[in-house]
Amino acid sequence: MLNATLGLLSAANQRLEKAIYLLAMFLVANMVLALFLSALVRYISGTGYDWFIELPPILTSWLVFPLLGPLLKSGSHIKVDLLNNALSPWQFAMLKFVIATIALLSSIVFFIAGIEATYLYFMLGQVMELEIEIPIWWVYLAFPTGFGIMTLFATELMLVELKTMRDLARG
Image 1 (cartoon, one colour):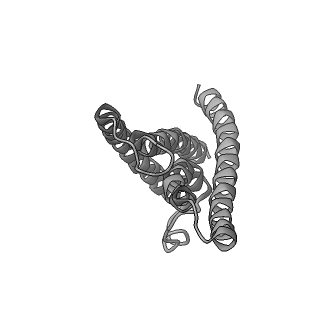
Image 2 (cartoon, helix red, strand yellow; image 1 turned 135 degrees about the vertical axis):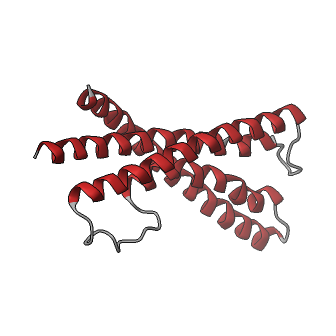
Protein backbone atom coordinates (compact mmCIF):
# COMPACT_ATOMS: atom_id res chain seq x y z
CA MET A 1 0.00 0.00 0.00
CA LEU A 2 2.78 2.41 0.93
CA ASN A 3 4.72 1.65 -2.26
CA ALA A 4 1.64 2.14 -4.47
CA THR A 5 0.69 5.43 -2.81
CA LEU A 6 4.26 6.67 -2.97
CA GLY A 7 4.53 5.66 -6.63
CA LEU A 8 1.39 7.56 -7.61
CA LEU A 9 2.32 10.64 -5.60
CA SER A 10 5.89 10.64 -6.93
CA ALA A 11 4.69 10.39 -10.53
CA ALA A 12 2.18 13.21 -10.03
CA ASN A 13 4.79 15.37 -8.27
CA GLN A 14 7.33 14.79 -11.07
CA ARG A 15 4.86 16.14 -13.62
CA LEU A 16 3.92 18.99 -11.32
CA GLU A 17 7.58 19.83 -10.73
CA LYS A 18 8.23 20.08 -14.47
CA ALA A 19 5.21 22.32 -14.92
CA ILE A 20 6.34 24.55 -12.04
CA TYR A 21 9.84 24.90 -13.47
CA LEU A 22 8.34 25.78 -16.86
CA LEU A 23 6.14 28.38 -15.17
CA ALA A 24 9.19 29.76 -13.34
CA MET A 25 11.16 30.05 -16.58
CA PHE A 26 8.23 31.77 -18.27
CA LEU A 27 7.82 34.22 -15.38
CA VAL A 28 11.52 35.08 -15.18
CA ALA A 29 11.62 35.62 -18.94
CA ASN A 30 8.59 37.92 -18.74
CA MET A 31 10.06 39.81 -15.80
CA VAL A 32 13.34 40.41 -17.64
CA LEU A 33 11.52 41.27 -20.87
CA ALA A 34 9.25 43.76 -19.08
CA LEU A 35 12.22 45.56 -17.54
CA PHE A 36 14.10 45.54 -20.85
CA LEU A 37 11.08 46.91 -22.73
CA SER A 38 10.58 49.55 -20.06
CA ALA A 39 14.16 50.77 -20.51
CA LEU A 40 13.91 50.58 -24.30
CA VAL A 41 10.63 52.51 -24.46
CA ARG A 42 11.95 55.16 -22.07
CA TYR A 43 15.15 55.49 -24.12
CA ILE A 44 13.32 55.81 -27.44
CA SER A 45 10.33 57.92 -26.41
CA GLY A 46 11.46 59.62 -23.23
CA THR A 47 8.42 58.28 -21.38
CA GLY A 48 7.47 54.80 -20.34
CA TYR A 49 4.66 52.61 -19.22
CA ASP A 50 4.28 52.10 -15.48
CA TRP A 51 3.01 48.56 -15.83
CA PHE A 52 6.34 47.44 -17.35
CA ILE A 53 8.05 48.37 -14.10
CA GLU A 54 5.24 47.11 -11.85
CA LEU A 55 4.92 43.70 -13.54
CA PRO A 56 8.03 41.99 -12.08
CA PRO A 57 7.07 42.60 -8.42
CA ILE A 58 3.55 41.37 -9.17
CA LEU A 59 4.88 38.18 -10.78
CA THR A 60 7.39 37.52 -7.99
CA SER A 61 4.82 35.87 -5.73
CA TRP A 62 3.89 33.52 -8.58
CA LEU A 63 7.58 32.73 -9.02
CA VAL A 64 8.41 32.11 -5.36
CA PHE A 65 5.47 30.30 -3.79
CA PRO A 66 4.92 27.51 -6.36
CA LEU A 67 8.64 26.69 -6.16
CA LEU A 68 8.48 25.90 -2.42
CA GLY A 69 7.57 22.24 -2.90
CA PRO A 70 10.10 21.36 -5.61
CA LEU A 71 12.86 23.16 -3.69
CA LEU A 72 11.96 21.30 -0.50
CA LYS A 73 12.06 17.99 -2.33
CA SER A 74 15.39 18.70 -4.02
CA GLY A 75 16.96 19.93 -0.78
CA SER A 76 17.71 23.30 -2.35
CA HIS A 77 16.65 25.19 0.74
CA ILE A 78 18.81 26.26 3.66
CA LYS A 79 19.87 23.27 5.72
CA VAL A 80 22.52 22.19 8.17
CA ASP A 81 24.59 19.13 7.26
CA LEU A 82 26.13 18.71 10.72
CA LEU A 83 24.06 15.69 11.73
CA ASN A 84 24.53 13.71 8.52
CA ASN A 85 27.70 12.01 9.76
CA ALA A 86 26.70 11.75 13.43
CA LEU A 87 23.42 9.84 13.00
CA SER A 88 22.81 6.26 11.96
CA PRO A 89 20.90 5.76 8.71
CA TRP A 90 17.69 4.98 10.64
CA GLN A 91 18.10 8.05 12.89
CA PHE A 92 18.80 10.21 9.86
CA ALA A 93 15.68 8.89 8.14
CA MET A 94 13.71 9.64 11.31
CA LEU A 95 15.09 13.19 11.39
CA LYS A 96 14.13 13.72 7.74
CA PHE A 97 10.67 12.28 8.52
CA VAL A 98 10.21 14.78 11.37
CA ILE A 99 11.34 17.63 9.10
CA ALA A 100 8.90 16.52 6.37
CA THR A 101 6.12 16.28 8.96
CA ILE A 102 6.82 19.81 10.20
CA ALA A 103 6.91 21.03 6.59
CA LEU A 104 3.58 19.30 5.90
CA LEU A 105 1.85 20.71 8.97
CA SER A 106 3.23 24.19 8.28
CA SER A 107 2.17 24.06 4.65
CA ILE A 108 -1.38 23.09 5.66
CA VAL A 109 -1.59 26.00 8.12
CA PHE A 110 -0.25 28.47 5.53
CA PHE A 111 -2.50 26.99 2.83
CA ILE A 112 -5.57 27.69 4.96
CA ALA A 113 -4.32 31.18 5.86
CA GLY A 114 -3.64 31.85 2.18
CA ILE A 115 -7.15 30.83 1.21
CA GLU A 116 -8.58 33.16 3.85
CA ALA A 117 -6.40 36.09 2.72
CA THR A 118 -7.20 35.49 -0.93
CA TYR A 119 -10.91 35.30 -0.18
CA LEU A 120 -10.74 38.54 1.82
CA TYR A 121 -9.10 40.42 -1.07
CA PHE A 122 -11.50 38.80 -3.52
CA MET A 123 -14.47 40.04 -1.48
CA LEU A 124 -12.95 43.52 -1.20
CA GLY A 125 -12.71 43.68 -4.98
CA GLN A 126 -9.66 45.92 -4.96
CA VAL A 127 -7.48 46.25 -8.03
CA MET A 128 -3.96 47.55 -8.44
CA GLU A 129 -3.84 51.07 -9.74
CA LEU A 130 -1.70 50.55 -12.80
CA GLU A 131 -2.29 51.16 -16.47
CA ILE A 132 -3.81 47.69 -16.54
CA GLU A 133 -6.15 46.60 -13.76
CA ILE A 134 -4.98 43.52 -11.89
CA PRO A 135 -7.11 42.28 -8.98
CA ILE A 136 -5.11 42.16 -5.75
CA TRP A 137 -6.56 38.76 -4.89
CA TRP A 138 -4.79 37.35 -7.94
CA VAL A 139 -1.42 38.14 -6.39
CA TYR A 140 -2.49 36.61 -3.07
CA LEU A 141 -3.69 33.45 -4.83
CA ALA A 142 -0.04 32.45 -5.30
CA PHE A 143 0.23 31.98 -1.53
CA PRO A 144 -2.28 29.11 -1.10
CA THR A 145 -1.31 27.69 -4.48
CA GLY A 146 2.33 27.43 -3.41
CA PHE A 147 1.56 25.95 -0.02
CA GLY A 148 -0.93 23.52 -1.55
CA ILE A 149 1.86 22.32 -3.84
CA MET A 150 4.24 22.16 -0.89
CA THR A 151 1.71 19.94 0.92
CA LEU A 152 1.96 17.40 -1.89
CA PHE A 153 5.75 17.41 -1.88
CA ALA A 154 6.04 17.24 1.92
CA THR A 155 3.63 14.29 1.92
CA GLU A 156 5.83 12.54 -0.63
CA LEU A 157 8.93 13.18 1.49
CA MET A 158 7.18 11.75 4.56
CA LEU A 159 6.23 8.61 2.66
CA VAL A 160 9.77 8.23 1.31
CA GLU A 161 11.20 8.39 4.83
CA LEU A 162 8.56 5.98 6.17
CA LYS A 163 9.57 3.53 3.45
CA THR A 164 13.26 4.08 4.22
CA MET A 165 12.74 3.47 7.94
CA ARG A 166 10.66 0.37 7.19
CA ASP A 167 13.33 -0.99 4.86
CA LEU A 168 16.13 -0.25 7.36
CA ALA A 169 14.17 -1.95 10.18
CA ARG A 170 13.74 -5.06 8.02
CA GLY A 171 17.49 -5.04 7.48
